[in-house]
Length: 335
Image 1 (cartoon, rainbow, N blue to C red):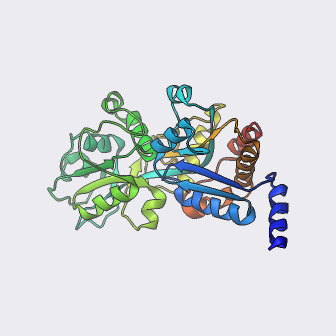
Image 2: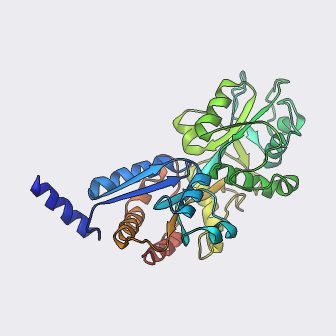
Image 3: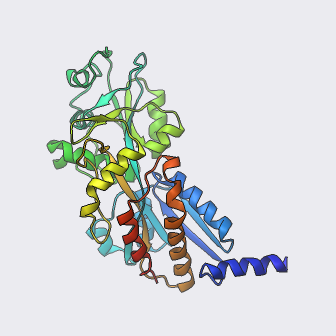
């Protein structure tokens, strides 16, 4: 036992961690699959460090890191200037991977992969398009015989980064949506029913013929949920893929601000998937316990060196090289 403890101590000191660290984090469900994998692998390589992550949604992650009740948070929607100013600790945004949000649906008898224009999705959730037989849906799907069936829009009832990405996209393609309900992790929906977390949205869509919802790509593929293609800024209907997300990031990377808070929805380019986003860890710039700060910084360094290569296998896209290089510099400022 003594030998094992000494070995663990040597490994921890090699990572810049002199004592055992129990790190608590909470937030987005969107990146949960890859975060779970990363935190497990990191703990295996660094036995003195354990990262406990609770997937409570982006709104909860922002709230808890702002209140100082967790060591760091996670969100798919960047904190606003007001949220940053109100936080008890100074927070930096560290992008980790990129992902996609997809429209899922339950339409018995329709085996075609459906196409969705952003303005059509917006009007469904605004309550202006109420039936699957609407001519605007048919226009995007020539040859498909839609039933005269009511549409039930399903949305996230909890504070959600997935909702932020979805509503950010709709704000760019629908002037009416941009005015109200706008974009955010929690918004005032005009039509439909709410369900908690991606599991709730997917469950409601699955059990309700005629329903439509939105979840992250990884969740849809892992759970074998039918999802459609979305028209991008170039007018192309694209199914979500890591390559399509990478194209959206590449088209937007040149305008990446120093604080990494950027939107890449509806990005230009024929190959850019339109409902794409970075996801961020919300890291305090200063830790009361320097050893804990060192452990978090070491994990982030490991993430860039080892974790990014695992992104595509789980349906995410890795950080573009220019962004990863900027992130490496930002990690060095954590104290």
